[in-house]
Length: 577
Image (cartoon, rainbow, N blue to C red; front, side, top):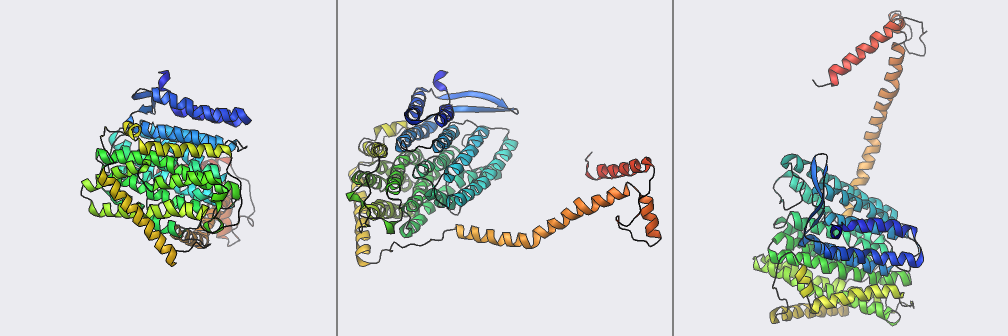
């Protein structure tokens, strides 16, 4: 049983210890927490542990199987890299929040039932909101509130679906359910909010670029990948997810090409990569699920590496817009090299990890005959090379000379980036360890002559297109501008609603507040004291306001009688027999 302690416990307890510690002791704790958790997770035996009863429902706190283990390994490995990345940060608050956030993500992927999952789901929302508020940007507060409102709405939809599902089936177990009715549809939408589905995605691009250099790396990992896990667990094979995933891969490309903020470029790129996973889950075959889950694993590594690279640039220069950067390769050579490795990985170059997993997804889609979807994902793959594979390193480290002459990133940042860069190369050259932990046994080989040749053709023609567009002046120029996304409609609708509320709804409630909490209580108060005098004054055509009527004493019995009548009317009106 000791080997099956829920790993979130180490993160929750560790967060308190980190909050109270300082200096080297804190950094030792930050390293020890993921290392110990990983050891316990590797030795954990498949099965369900810590079963308990709550309000008559059987719940499971820790379920270990191959699907949950993939995400558990990824969350712990990246937690170790993030710990090193921020060693030089003096404030403990951000790490305290981050450990709770990471621990909740682990709690969610190992939860065996819907109620336990929902608890960790909501703790993640709260922790990630506070993580956004740690940003040193004036927009961070507003972005955090918008983020929280989005996830509050998604959480309420999820909760409603869970309640209806449990009420209908009497079952709390979280397993494959499929979209069969209203409850399961609501649950899937609740998961979809965190997966940044189209039209529900703006919270991601709005909030992630506004975190600190450390907090943003944390944010890119847990919320969206937990959503991918829940979709893979509960809704594999739902064909609507294929369409949703294809849309997710395509539309962010246009925003990423136009965007000036480099971390916002990566945020749109994140949605693009999530689309590949969602589409794979929608296909639902063993190859597709393996590809989607494997892509989630390596995406955590290479996307974190890219955000770390841009975080290092922000940390050293105080700049993050493409128009303000350039020429940094001379002063930050290691950061440049590690970022290029991340860019090569996200572009799925052979010998890098994403080449293997993305090939699995595309092969599964082609095998099932989804020709249009396959072409869409192929276009999206070329677009990834443009906005993340080329744009990020080119405009940040090369392009024009910005005049900035920063020092290289601190050693701990380089260690974290070097670790992730090495891991992406290792799993690209030797994918066997990754393939061995996937949910289903597989003998898939991405390194066939056809796969490799086709991928190189796609990549080199994409590079050629980028070069020709840039040289001809047709490539969109990097300018200081705000690009409008679908949140434009949310904000407009919110503004219209607030004006309508101020003009019509608020006066309505003010009227009723005055009526029911001032006028009627005053009248009832007077009636219980001297109703006969008021009646006499009315009969004599005298002023009938309570302030003008002379109060005369009368028997207490009359008051008791009137109050009893009021209570009887209330009971007859509102009580159900």
